[in-house]
Image 1 (cartoon, rainbow, N blue to C red):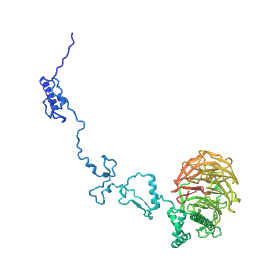
Image 2: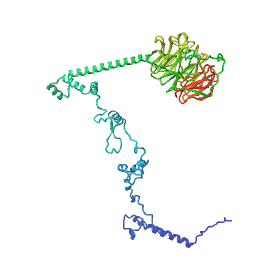
Image 3: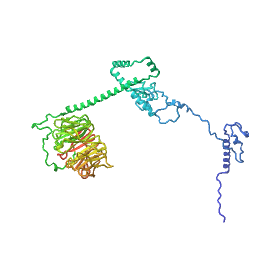
Image 4: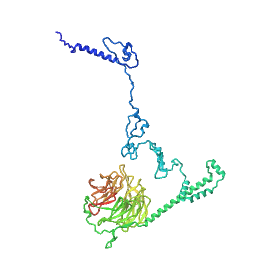
Length: 613
């Protein structure tokens, strides 16, 4: 059997198919009528508006009525439609992008048109500064330095504005402009400066003296002719006269410096004699004749058995310093008085037990007071200041017993713990030395010179047999008292500077405020071993010599920070238990009351001294 084949036939009728062929032929005839207008004549009898000559010359295939597609012009003429006139419009100076390519005149053309109410010009809507429209300008460093120095030295400079409006230079309102001078002029000699100074101070009399001095060396006609011919040639006599004048000016300067040094020495002697204290209470003795510095109450006997507790509330504020308080100290043994050193160059002593008022102000220093230290009985104390002086005070009368200095800034002062050596102090100085003084004779006894930076603290250990010093060179040195030889070097690559050191109540450990935001611990005897586990962290103290503190029973460690907060840690667990917002500025020092178990005193750079319980 043959397979069945299915034949498909078109559904379109024959008359429709013939109509389609005719329609296609008509369309091709219409396309052939277009021309590129390059040649007006067409072969084959076609008109000028017919198809292109090459297209018409081709033979049309049989059975197809039509012509090929015409040629296309790749670069026809385009009408700009007034695009060139848009170049003349003003450009908004605040525009971030420009879609055209305007000329420089168009960029700087002023706006024209009606102004809004309250505006003086149309440019005000594009101002980005209260004085106008500010633009960045590229300027070389040489040109800027030239105009800057010219303005500050001679009172004028070139106007940097794009539209100067006739003002090519700007003049200073605080000085008279000197348009005839520039920074490239030759500097005047010392003789000319001295002459100008004499003329300004002496007036007409000094001018007459100058004329007389010039007449003493007469010039002949030949000399004047030679001076004019050789451009002011100066002979040996004139040069020698100038040299003598410069030597005389130098001698006068040296004499003036000597007089200033003598005046400074006289002021120092006057400082020793002047009144440096003010007593603020009504009487210096009570009805029994006891002095105001004596404690009127007896200390409790069971202080060693009391347990210290963390303070919770703010009780009192001592205010009186006009600037920040740098250091505070308790009166020895009884702690009934509080001594404070401030950056307003004053030292004040406050009553703690009764009315809590300022009792006396000590005003012997000329600059901020850096550190203070009581003697063993509290009747005298020492102070060091940024005026480079060390002063020995009488606490009761407020008189300065002695003042001595080594012309260097002292950062700390420590008194020998032996009651028979209260005249011996050691100060940490800015000249990389720890200097030992005898306050009775105001002489330097010993210098401990091994540090490579300024000495920040001096601490007596082992009942005064050894001293421990810290410095900006990130090292801690242990010395034998009186012998300038280092017994132990404490220096590690990971160590930071320690600007504050405090002993614990039992004198067995010492803690230091490290500049990497933590408190480190060392033994205060023997080998001064580092206690790596006893580190107290959490606060921020970098850059400030904040003095830490111990509780009276040695159970708690406390410290301020640069945010004015007071932090408390457990001595055994190194865990932070409490944080108190104590001051508005930096909390510089804190002390636990030795008699009252939960009382803490803090001071800060806000000028306040606060009591917490």
